[in-house]
Image (tube, rainbow, N blue to C red; front, side):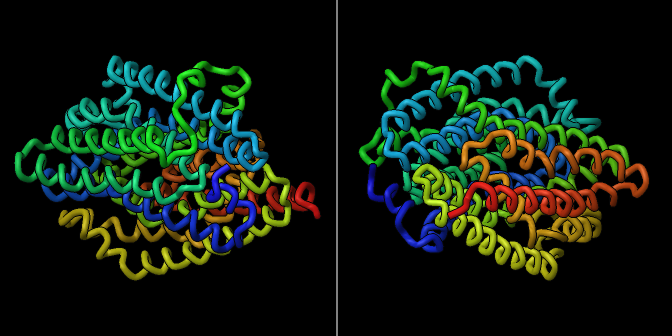
Length: 446
């Protein structure tokens, strides 16, 4: 076991969380620029319908790539606990199985995406004038998705090794590439949506190839060993049980996007989909610090659960929630005072500038408390308890937000869509706190 992994069980918790969360936050911040930059550039250089098209297409790409994310998070939970229990053989076997599963499933879903592109785009809300632009964009980025899936699989594994800085670098590389290539392909060469899609695909490839390089280099403790590619039923089952939480969550998000785009188009037309496109990008970027704390929490909690250090696990939960709550409060204050300026970055369209700021504020209303829900579900993933992790993960996007986003607009129009977010956040957080407290009181005694 390397020293960095050993530190997860001995170093001060607050220092560990900062060490893990800061690189994760920076990585997520920069990675989210892949989507934000596309939205800014196409909004300023192509038009409002281009923002709507990206809003429709990216959830499809991320649904496919979430397979890699689920395999990565599920496998990294096993790896963290295996390292905590000093079982390197199981850690190596798990890693090899992760690679096999990711490659097979990602390629399969890319083939399906190509064969049924128009029905899939229609399902996700590519209606009216949005469809031809969305088709052009989707037709290019679909080829970068296998690289993104591999990157999303490898990133949590790198953190499970105790090397968060390399995980951060892996997420920074594609963001920088995407910015430069967007300028070249859209502004200089005037390739429009096809150019935006090509820039995104190449950026995904750069991320996947960097992570492959890391695992082939001497920097990684987990080596790519061909014998470990042979799937083990027991390992695969455990990966799927834990990673299935992430995959099902992304599936719920995809269903949510279908419902959101349906409600937005029905009650507000293409312009409302464009408004949500901007809000969604702001959410991805602004919530990065909170998500970084959650990502940093997973390897620390997982290692100490595997090492049966209950006091350290409880302290990790408390410190992670405290850090995330402070960050969430800062984020909300920033949105409150800078909402108009934020929207101006994305577009100069007068309708969007008028309607988006208020919607943005509503969506972010309960941001200070969302960390409690995220850490609660993340704890059960780290502990290898798939069922409660799945249920808690689905609370917001699946159990509450989908029906709220469908029914509230019937009575309140487009505003019903915006209000469904803080209501779902509040309800899911209350339930998660109750479940997490019961778990801590029952299973993390001295």
